[in-house]
Image (cartoon, rainbow, N blue to C red; front, side):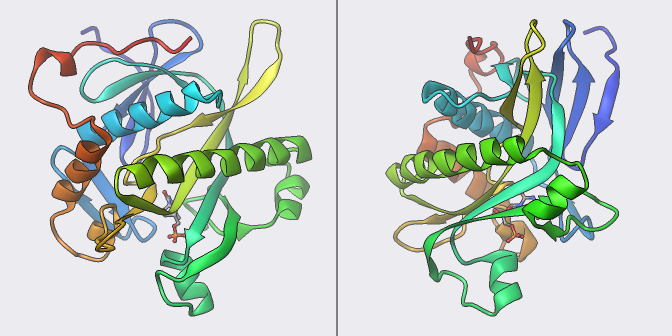
Amino acid sequence: MAKRRRIYEGKSKDLFEGPEPGTIVQHFRDDVTAHNNKKQGVITGKGVLNNRISEYLMLRLHDIGVPTHLIRRLNMREQLVREVEIIPIQLVIRNTVAGSMATRFGIDEGTPLPRSIVEYYWKSDEFGDPIVSEEHITAFGWAAPQDIDDMLALALRINDYLAGLFFGAGLKLVDFKLEFGRNYDENGDMRIVVADEISPDTCRLWDVETRKKLDKDRFRQDLGNVAEAYQEVARRLGVLPTSGPGDVAESKTVQ
Ligand code: TMP
């Protein structure tokens, strides 16, 4: 393949210039980081699994009319995505107390929440992604009130849908993170689309029966068998790659 221009090197993914204007190639690596980059490692095969899992989940969102940046998967580690203007806010949607919420409020991990809670975090490596309010987001110009409304409505819809989808696979969607971008069509009209990835790197997923953690917490908390956990999620979703040629072929283009 001709040398491509890398436009961004992330903690676990790289972005390359796409084949046509307005497109980007998203490459999933095996690198993993936690605790704001203080803990680093490699989970062999993670990039392949996350590429597949994220493709699958974004396609399911597309099925229910939620716009995403995905155009199609290109190969084992890459997908073609629409170029978007990333909104520098992460939305975290929580159904059950875990992670930083358990620490911040001293509530036992696993405590169910009476309703789903959405939190906003400013994407800033320098400042450790601090939690922010809607007022911060609008005052600092990170997003307009309408953008926040759109992201919130999409996030709640995605949560309802994915919680059911995962439950059907014997997995509890404890919490997850979403990123959004602004995508402009040929007339210059803007729409907010889901960007980045949705995978065991960005979701907490517990076995419904045993509460076994099947996500990045296995790395964060040194629980072992990290790759096996990601494989288990892929297997339950029916997307575990085999070594057949189907893995190399491109997937269907999202219309
Ligand atoms: P937290 O409990 O550490 O705040 O994380 C909440 C959820 O968001 C969890 O599923 C992991 C995900 N997440 C990311 O994907 N990226 C991040 O940078 C952070 C802070 C959380």
